[in-house]
Amino acid sequence: MAPAAEDLWLVRLEVGWRPLHELARRMRLPPRTVDVGYLMHCLLADLFDQQAPRPFAVMEDLGRSVGVLGYARCAAEELARAAHERGSPPALTAVNWPALESKVMPRDWQSGKLFRYWTRVCPTVRKAQSGTHNRKGAEVDAFVSACWAAGAPEVPVSRESVYREWLQAHLERQTGARLRDSRLERFERSRLVRRGVGHPRRAHVTERPMAELSGTIEVTDGAAFRCLLQRGLGRHRAFGFGLLLLRPVAS
Image (tube, rainbow, N blue to C red):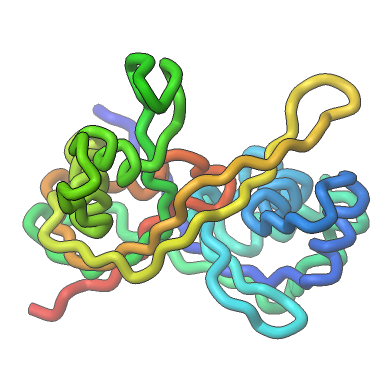
């Protein structure tokens, strides 16, 4: 008999802006570059270690704090208990603990069920070969890669269509869901901070695409769909990208 699936929880927490900026100062990150996704990754790792919500998304600016949603394998109460056992004092004071809440996600996802979705992704591709514009293994905006493939400036390339194809390919690769439709709600070039290994860990800044997509998907395999939610979509899933939020389509 196959083991029962673990519960998956959608978790919401509020984190103060001032502690996040103080964290950036302590980590000696570039002062003019605030990568909230990276800072949140560091804070969540400090508080929850392997139990940290992932993927997650920074969702709303609440003035003095910011709201975060993510998928975790335990409920809010267990997360809070774990954080107070292992989190550092600065990290603990960053979170509004009374506002921490969670809801359990379904264990069984019915094939054929339709959902409205929203996701914030980093739609990049890895280049298998060196080319005129790139080296082998480079991470490139999928839209830019499509423009290179078109070969001429006068050939029209739709960013929305490229990102729709990118999302469809990821869903097909992971299985579990079929894309019904997709819209590009927002796009920008984001400056991402990453730190290397060694001591001291030096920070470097890269630029990557950020796309917010919404539309409709259909569940095709319940177990695979659950894995899809847990894993997230695309690159940089530990840093605020790839969360798939759902709302049932009324029958």
